[in-house]
Image 1 (cartoon, protein in one colour):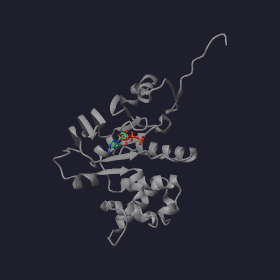
Image 2 (image 1 turned 135 degrees about the horizontal axis):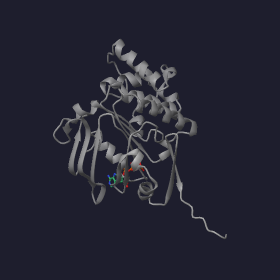
Image 3 (image 1 turned 90 degrees about the vertical axis):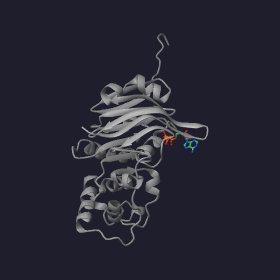
Length: 267
Ligand SMILES: Nc1ncnc2c1ncn2[C@@H]1O[C@H](COP(=O)(O)OP(=O)(O)OP(=O)(O)O)[C@@H](O)[C@H]1O
């Protein structure tokens, strides 16, 4: 099994602030990781490193057999599918959904006059169907609901057949139904043996799709715990990650967390 990501003692500093502090982490082919942490924990900084958008201040970041600092990031980035609110903002609102997806085969946002062959268009259609957005082909991106946009972004991220798929808070801003639909879509993807290694960033254990295999928990730029979901996702680690006493339940592969309440006998 080959290694997709290998971070060794990685730190990211900006001025006086330490955004990531001595993070070590390995992601292997076939892994489906969720990265959990409170606001400001360093999740986005971590996935910006893993998608070759920022360099570490210290430590070594290995991505798909290359080392950041010793590789042309413009050659590395097309091998990584990445979705985030920042990427979504760059998609022109008047662009047709089919073009939003197909244009990713050349790593560009905004369709001008490039030529795509029928195979590219067919792949874009297939991916939209796979993420449950097959009916949106001829809509413009700006007319879609937030949940529909997230699906289109995932199809776009898969278009270039990436070896690593990074989804930074794909469920942010979705209503309950939208979130549940997206969790199902991500679960299908997680269970697809042909899908690339996946890293999903979230604040909420409720968003962990069944089929995900590992969890990395971050607090204030440091790793609290990392490992297989079934042993690492527990109330103790979660409480340390979010800085409050939490209780955790799991049912049919779905997690739920809430603050632990103390019960007093005798009223
Ligand atoms: N250029 C910068 N200078 C100083 N601090 C920064 C800089 N960029 C980010 N930070 C801080 O680094 C911390 C980590 O930010 P990051 O966006 O990685 O967190 P996050 O876990 O993704 O947060 P959220 O869940 O709120 O999106 C935050 O406290 C943020 O304010």
